[in-house]
Length: 370
Image (tube, rainbow, N blue to C red; front, side):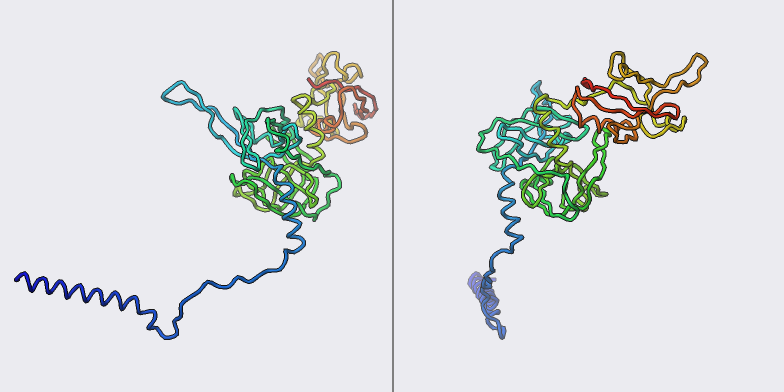
C-alpha cells in the first residue's frame, strides 16, 4: 500500500477511537435522571449516653496503668557465637506502685530469659524479675521508669463482688495493646488449675472478652478498681468464648507484697508428708490429710502427730489424719496448703486430727516452709 493512503487510514482510525472515548465519557450524562453524586451530610449526634461516658472516663483513668509485656528468649546466631534475645510471647501487666513494680501472670514470663515492658506512652523498658508464685500464677517484675509514668491502679476487693455487676478488662489481645472489653461478673468462687496443677480457689468468672495476650491484665469494677488478674479462658478454639477467669484481688493483695519483700512466697509448714488418695480409699479414711511422714524436729513432731507406717509383720499401723485447720475442714493436701497460705510462720493454729475413729484437737506453731 502507498505511504500516503496508509497514513490516512491510521489517522482515520485514531479519530474514530477518540470519538468513541469521548462518547464513553459523556455516556453518564446521557442516562436519564443521572445527577452528580455528592458526599452525604453528617447527621449530628447528641451527647454520649451516661454509661458510654462512664466507660470512656474509666478507660482514660485506668489505661495509663496497663502495660504490654514481651517475654524474650535467647537465640544463638547459627553463623556466629553471638547470642541475642528475641521475642518469645506477649502478655499484659499493670503498675502496682510508683517504685516500678509490675504485676502479671507467671505463665506470661515462664521459661523466658528476659522481658520488656511497654508503657501506655509506648516507651519500653527492660524488666527484672522480682519474684513469682506459680501456685497462684502471679509474678512481679520491676522497671526503672520515672514515677510520673507509673500511675498505680486503685485496688479494690473481691470478697463483696456480686454476680451481675459490670466489669472491664484492659489488655493486649493478640498484641493489640490498650484494648478495652466490657462484661459482667458471671459467677464467683470458681476453681481452676494453675500451671503447676495447684488449685486456685475463689476465682472470678466473667464474660468480658479475654483472649491470648490478655493474660496478666487487670479486671476492674465500675469504679475503676482492680478486682482480679485475668489468667485463663475456657474455649474449644483458644479464643474468647465468653468464659474467662480472673485471680481474685484479695489473693493478689496478699501475695504480691510478700513477693516484693522476699522475692518469693514462702508458705508456712507443719512438717508432714501427705499420703495419696489411693491410701484414703484403700483404708476408707475420712476426708483430710493422711500423714505418712513426720520430719524430725518439726512442729508436727513436737505436737506428737503420728504417721501411718507398717509393723514388723507388714501390717499397717494406723496414723493421724488432719481433717480441719482452725475448724475449717480440709478434704486433701491442696485444701490444707491453701489454708496455710493465709497464715504466717510463727502463728499458732488448731488442728483437728482423726485416728482410728477418734477425733482430737491440738495446737501447733507454724514454721517456715523453706
